[in-house]
Image (tube, rainbow, N blue to C red; front, top):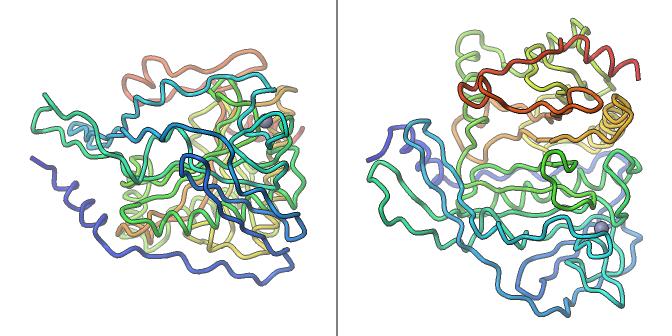
Length: 390
Ligand SMILES: [Zn+2]
């Protein structure tokens, strides 16, 4: 038994993949050197280097067990949402000491996930993936017919932002942040071209407070086989807004915030960062390009350089807010790969934090967890004012 919306999504899964156009290389940005190899268990690793970087070590001398691919997903018919089940992830490395960091470069004494002795930015397939192109699916025994189950097909990648274990995204040089941006663009195009991938989601979880298991500055990229619930809701609202007004919803929100200025944290020639008027989290900043594009690969060189400068400024303000490294989730909202809702999208980055004071975290309690109704004890205008002032 299936819901009508599920059929729409299945059609979307079968539709031909719409590839993002190659990124324009119009500005003065340096070329990126891309080197691909495979780790001992067959996972792909890709180095993204400034063009003057030395050659990278491609051989992984370790002996590794095959990667577990037991990911499965089940459809919740009540909320009409897919839930991914990756029980094999329980065995993953948890808070290793710095000397055991798997994201640092390899040395003559120690082999890590990165065989090279150095790197600029590196991407590799997660050893404990929530989604895998080889997912075999899980046990469906005892599931009611109403609950559909499918293999968790997709891909999960790790992006190391720098080889410096003690750095943070906020402390990167603009050229390095730009290289991360080029890496996100490359991976978005590559993952969107994989069969069955419906949405590519680059993100960063930062800080132990939100469950980060490795201290090395890194992010992740998920390639989902469905359009995520948040994106589907936002884009459905955008379609209704467009049918009503002929305008793009996100462009109208951005325009309203720029006109008001009350919640703008920082802006540049091509980007604006603001606290949304109905922010849910104690600290929440959205970063939009002024030109509506659907995804990161569509950004020009100039827009990418400009983002690096502005985002670093925003991150430094966030860390200055409580005079400590702010735990946050930075989430890129990109257009789905080939869903009919794709054309409503507007690329933007959402940075959210559960830190509600220097020493207090916000927990999702009764109203948020039970009913999805957020209650916040700070006014977005006040948060924006404080972020502007630091
Ligand atoms: Zn490290």
